[in-house]
Length: 130
Image 1 (cartoon, one colour):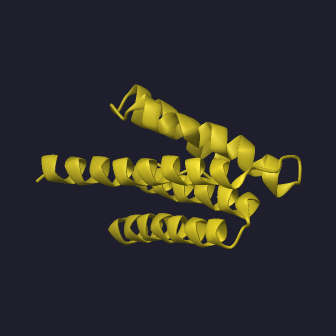
Image 2 (cartoon, rainbow, N blue to C red; image 1 turned 90 degrees about the vertical axis):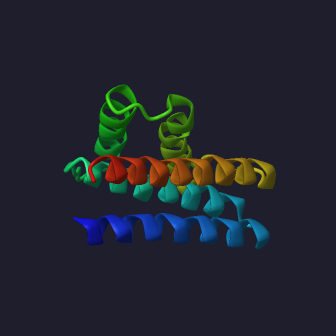
């Protein structure tokens, strides 16, 4: 599980880097999508630490909310953008929304905070079990 967890967190960090590059390249739609994927991979990693997996994006989001926020003490304010970005990612991927560069930067900041907080939560959980 540790190897898969490491892969998920590394993927989350790569998605953040991709988001930054896409914003700089003037592609805010794709940047918003990548921000979501950064959060998604971090959420998958968090669920792995609990021995949980889900096969659908909606399942990961629901399980994260229930297990991490409601039962696990994860900050709801930090977690809240995950569900919103899931919806927005669908809208931008299908051409229903055209986010601005400023909005893409805001989503990047939310995703970066989420990834950092998930990593801290995982580290504190590992330290507590030692």
